[in-house]
Image (cartoon, rainbow, N blue to C red; front, side, top):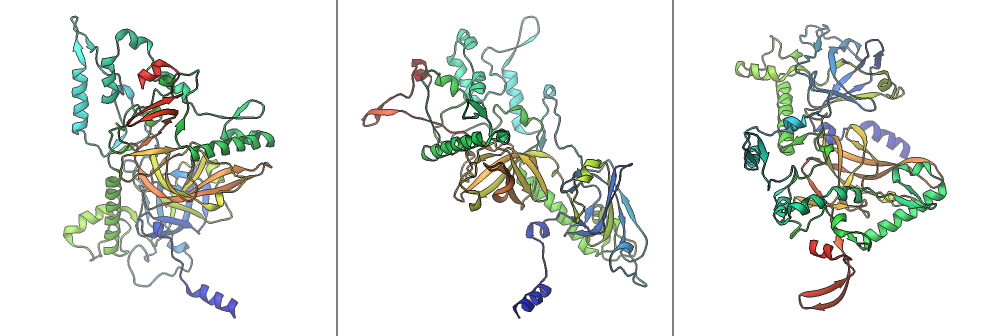
Length: 526
């Protein structure tokens, strides 16, 4: 009886997709009609029903999980090939007329396939989305350059003596007044700090330095030593967070040249564009990601409402002449919204171009292929932030502690990629977020920042790692789950350090601390 009740329950319930699929205007296709590939023209055809709440636009990019993102060449109706298809007598419209319709993409209106930009640094180009050219911020920069430039007697322009170097903020430029010209040539302004703050590798038995990502090529004994070293460092970080010690043979002013003191972590100002690395050049920056997402979603919902107002009496070029569901005043506007679109529920064949043979081979032939249409800007790469929480099953005795910048695999909605995340705290009342050296344990929520394709929320995130046990067996392990926070290249992640020493005398508001510095120049510097 219990088995019969279970079967009866399964037959009566209706399966519904998750909210991030059903409530987001992002159409997709379940290719239950098969996938065909032409190696000569490098085109792939997917046949299936258009699903989702929004119509399918031929000018949007199509992402195939496991294969990549490509452009659509054309969309053709295939209702005659649909399962249980029966033409209705006396009906009109593209859905039941029996005529095969086709929409071809316009290359001028198609979304770009370039994920990275190539700005010209000599022309001062930046990859900005949503910024206005008449912004006061850019005018201020031009005025500052004019102040720092003077004309010589020969008519040439020279930089003023007290002009700030490129990329320096007001805080850093204020120190130039206290530095002599002779001392400026000999003193290091941060170049040495890059060499001293390189990513440290774990030292294992035998004097070999091995990184976490290269540990798959070592022996089980070396892996065991690396595991113990990583656990020891994580335990020290939990007991003494952000505390560092200066060795007797090193200069603290050189080692911590890139650090500065903050009077208030929450209120002190920090320029988000100060000393950005070269890797920030090819990625895209949003003036306001929330506003951009709101505009994209509003346009998609307008297309959904326009498609719902005229039913399914349109196909590709707007509304048919026999349709009386639209008023004359709104005809042009809705026709523009539905131009190049296919209504949801149609059985179509989508032709995708420029698909290499290697990408087609990565599609599993034993399962049904899926293709999803991307919204505007979703193929661009930016600094993507995710709110994650570690799962309890990840805390196993044989597991390696996860450190920032370890390679992880992210499953963000429909797309999957590998990246080196930077963990940080998610402070709601501050524009600065503290850097976390290790993945927070115990189910605590944290933020992970990666370079990845822009994805509009709501969108779930799964984080995996390619774990290798001490015995040498490989497995993919789920380490954290969460959702996307957005894409913001100006989110400030600050690495905090606390200099330690031994207090030997304390009197009211004064204290005497030993073994914090070993050089008089360091005391004067700090």
